[in-house]
Image (cartoon, rainbow, N blue to C red; front, side):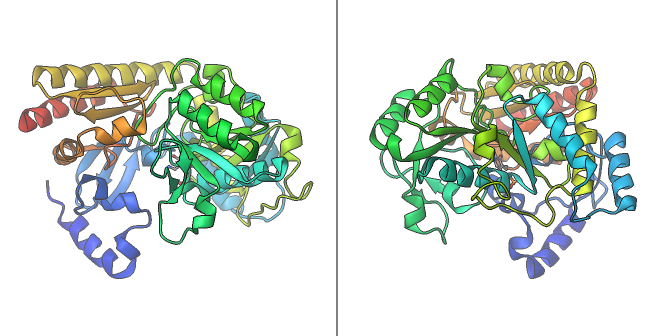
Amino acid sequence: MDFSTSKALHKEALDHIVGGVNSPSRAYKGVGGGTPVYMDQAKGAYFWDVDGNKYIDYLGAYGPIITGHAHPHIAEAITHAASNGVLYGTPTNLENKFAKMLKAAIPSLEKVRFVNSGTEAVMTTVRVARAYTGRNKIIKFSGSYHGHFDSVLVEAGSGPATLGTPDSAGIPQSVAEDVITVPFNDLDTFQQAMERWGDQVAAVLVEPIVGNFGIVEPHDGFLQSVKDVSHDAGALVIYDEVITAFRFTYGSTQQIYDIEPDMTAMGKIIGGGLPIGAYGGQQDIMEQVAPLGPAYQAGTMAGNPASMAAGIACLEVLQEDGVYDKLDRLGERLENGILAKASELSVPISVNRVCGALTVYFGGDTVENYEQAEASDGESFARFFWLMLEQGINLAPAKFEAWFLTTEHTESDIDKTIEAAGRAFAAMA
Ligand code: PMP
C-alpha cells in the first residue's frame, strides 16, 4: 500500500500541531510509532485514506461509532441542525427529548445533565460526589481510563491498595493523595482499601465492563459487592459508562447486571459521533449541581442542538429490532474465526468479547485485570496491527484497545478480516 500522502501530511502536522496529533494515541505509540494514516472519508464500516486506500474499520473512533460512519439518519439530523442554527445558548426542546430518552433507557438516571466529553462527565460526577458526601477521597480500579482530569490520571502506588502517584506531569501530589487505586476483579484488596479509608471515600469509580485494558468483564458478584461495601461505608458508586452505555444493549451495563449505581457518566455513543458527555443519577445527589446546589458545572456548548440531534438520531437507530443481536452475531463470528486461524497457525492469543466489542490479546493467557492485560505481548500485537493495516483492516493502535463492530459491518467484512488475520498470523508464526 502507498501511504505517501499520509506521510507528507504527518510531516507537515509535526510542524504545527504538538506531536502532529490532537490526541496522543493517534500517534501510534502503542504500536511502536510510525506514520498515522490520514483518513479522508468514512461511510458505513469503511474508511478511505488520503492515498485512496480502503479499510474495514474496527476503531469505531474509539467507541462512538456503532451505527457505522455517516449513517443517513444521523447525517440528516446533523444537516438539519447545521441549517437551523448549531448553538443557541438557550434551552431547547431537543434537550428535553434527549434527556427523556436517556432516562427511559437507564432508569437510575432520575436527573441528567449534558456536557461535552466523557472527561467532563466523569469529572463532574466526582465533584458532585464530593459535594454530597463532604469527603475527598475516591477509589478507582487500575488500568481503567476515566478521562484526562487530574484526579483520574493517578495510578496505584507501590502496594496493591495504596494511595496514588501522579501518572502525568502537572498533577500535584496533593491531588493524587486523594485517589486510591485497586486491581479490578480483586474484591479482597478493595475491601482492605475500604476498611482503611472507607470513611473518607466520597465515591468508588468503576467501569462496570472495562473497555480500557481491553474488554474485561467483572467476575460474578463483583459489582454487587463493590456497591454493598461502598454503601456500608457511606461512599457513592459512580459507573463510568462512557464506553459501555448503548454498546452492548439498548441502555447500559446497569441493565445487564441489574445493579443501579448512584451516578453514571456517559459519552461516546450517545453523541452519534458529535462531541458529548452526560452524567446523571439519583435526584437528591444531582440536586447538588448548580443552579440548585453548591457544586458548580457549566458549559457554553453543553446541550448544543447539533449534538442533541445526533444523539437522538443515533439512539433511534439503536432502538430498531435486532441491532444488538446482529452485533453479537458478527462479534461471535469474528471471535471464532480469529481464534481458529490463530490455533491453526499456533499463534497464542486469547479473546475477550462482549457483544460487538472484543479484544485480541497476544500471549494466550486469560485477561481479567490490568496486570494480566499489561503482561500480554505488545510486540506481537504491534506486528499484527501493521500486517492488518497493510491488508486494509484498521484496528485501534494499541494492545489494550477494543475492536468495535458497527451495525454496518457485514458477514463478508468479517470473513475478509478473518482471512487477513490468518495471513498476518502466518507471517508472524
Ligand atoms: N471514560 C472512559 C471509560 C473512556 O473510555 C473515556 C475515553 N476513552 C473517557 C472516560 C473520556 O472521554 P472523552 O475522551 O470523551 O473525554
